[in-house]
Image (cartoon, rainbow, N blue to C red; front, side):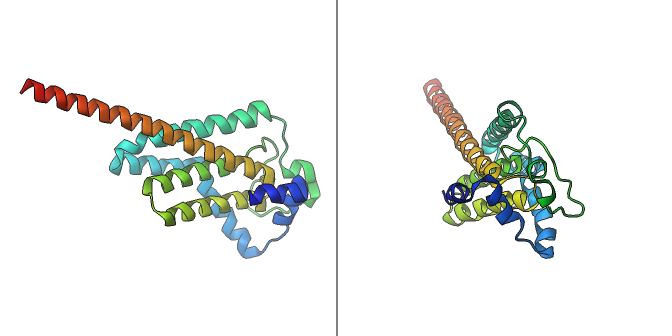
Length: 198
């Protein structure tokens, strides 16, 4: 809600410039690496963890990957295929960081942010403690912040990525719960059948 209000007050370009122009060399270094927490490769350790320790949760992770990816790329490539990123709109007002490739197209929504929020909410749900409900979304928030700081996205793109992440996590949890209910019913039926056979 705060980010939505920020965008409403300052608009698309000005909200971007407020974040992007408040910089420091230490932040340059920090955010160019922090942003990778929203990269697609971050799904791999979660899949490995699930397979090794929480196999029943694998369906939730798989569903969230599919839903998040489909929603993000449908918006990027079908609904808003010509949406330019900050460098394509603001040109020389953009400050680039050495070693960071700044992209020009497919701005809306931010895929890194949608991935980060999907995973953050999924992990918070799985660990089911109040501290994680704040910790993981905070990590995801700074992934979104990094996308604006690094001139990869407007604040509007990040806000949309957050919403995609929330929807993706919610739907994948519904899929997981439905799957678990089906499993439990099946186990109960098998138990009843085995008792009858005795």
